[in-house]
Image 1 (cartoon, rainbow, N blue to C red):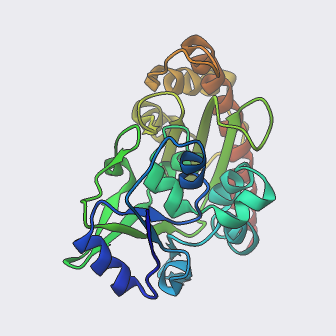
Image 2 (image 1 turned 180 degrees about the horizontal axis):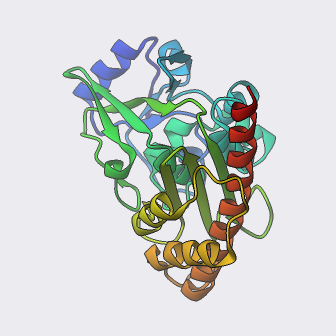
Length: 289
């Protein structure tokens, strides 16, 4: 096995163009497990961990550009105020050691349906920045995933960054597992509420992480955006049912399909209750300003 460690993004893209079979190594939290258990034996590893361009964060025009090499620990420590949903998902990833190494870009590259960051990226309306020697492009999160372990990445492309709106509403993330962290999600759910915008997405309940589009349309229309009152139970229950209905889960060692649908309905109802409370508090502050 050959180990290639470029010093810059331009050099990494040149290697990728010349050797598209090379496996990118970001944090290594997925790739190294596969190597250690002899599930994968690539001819070449392309180490991206020393590339500064992939480890930068910038904010402009209400958008956060998060470099693909930024580890979860930095998302939690530096971006909790701007990206609370992504920070919440990052806190559930592995152990402190894993959060120091693992990256959002690596999570995207693995494209596991159970990846913890995927529902937040979908619900937030994130865009993935993909680059090659031919140039770069932005791909909406809902178009990025093609199937388990499969994405729209061309063979010569690398994930270089994720673009997300900075906080302008209420964001929630939660998952079901045997414990809060160091576990693959049985299912997970993210909700983003901005004035007259709803983003709702789930993971580990279908072949790809997915937005619950009918549930989003329902809430966008039915939420009393200018009314500070708590939501009626009928609305909250209907939202949970629509989220569960959008799932396409399977039975596996972590849970049955029926359990996943039930759990998603519960997560969706809780997330809506908490996010609406945050929305009401935020709008109350604005109205008093």
